Length: 134
Image (cartoon, rainbow, N blue to C red; front, top):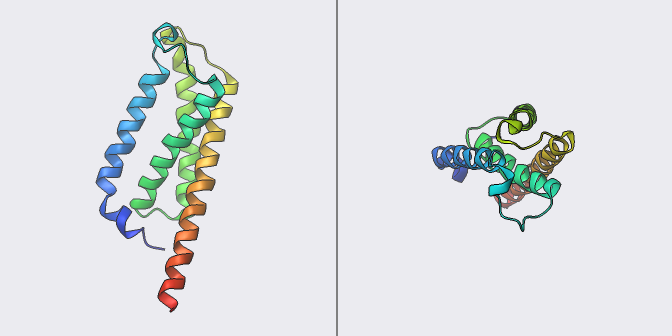
């Protein structure tokens, strides 16, 4: 299936948004704990939601650039697993701690993004096909 027309036209903007989100995520996870607001959701929740958002934007970018479903799913899982590991390993450099549970929450957010985004695009494709059949 070709890339979604609207996403394809916006692919450069999506790439910029993806890179901006990635920089923001890196800065957020590498800010020393004492500089963070005191009223934040739990750590696991932050990881899950953060990676859900980041993975969703990256997936939309991969769709916009026309990667097939199997390739983009494999790519997002590998990329996000590697980045999540890098993220956890480098946090001690700013007096934060690395945790296996955080990596698992990151991957949970990534898997949720894959399911939600791919399901949404499957439904959109189905609706487009039904509209062209009439």
